[in-house]
Image (cartoon, rainbow, N blue to C red):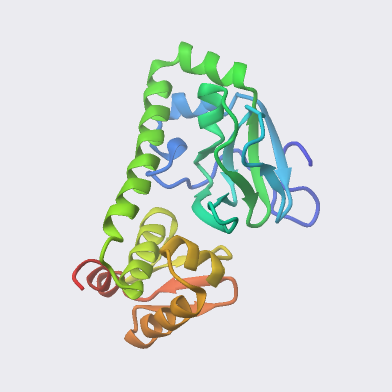
Length: 240
């Protein structure tokens, strides 16, 4: 891995990105953001690199600057389940960074990634010295838990098309790039991954995707999904 940017052939090194306001970095004041960006060392990872493994005992934290990662875990029957996606502006690994316990998920890059890797000691020292950052990190952790709980509750009794629409709506609202009446999700989200997020079999999700395309709510391209009409997707997701 390289420190300082994406290296030859990639995007040029930068010191700031347009992080979503919903992300940890995007929601901090300039001074607090600059404080966080002094932590650790900036590193680059290629696509498909495993950064953390479920159950391992590492405790470093990653501050994501640019790129996308996915968090996965294993179900009781041994299947791999996609738990969440995280993008630039987010933290990953903070659960182990806070409590020192084994990793709760495997984190893998979905493409080239720029991040800052921070030791647990430096991370905890920052939280002690900067109460406002500690509060923001706590709020980010609570938000992740609320989203996970909400997904379990909201999916009860819903058909697959509704669950898929809710998954896409949440991802687009959090990480999508606004385009006209819709948004573009510019990272590779496979049908098996959509199936695990939606709690459904892959063939059923394939059929639901086709239905969303035919409705005009979405279109799909190479390694991307475009929400053509956020209002329509919202109605499909939440109004039945």
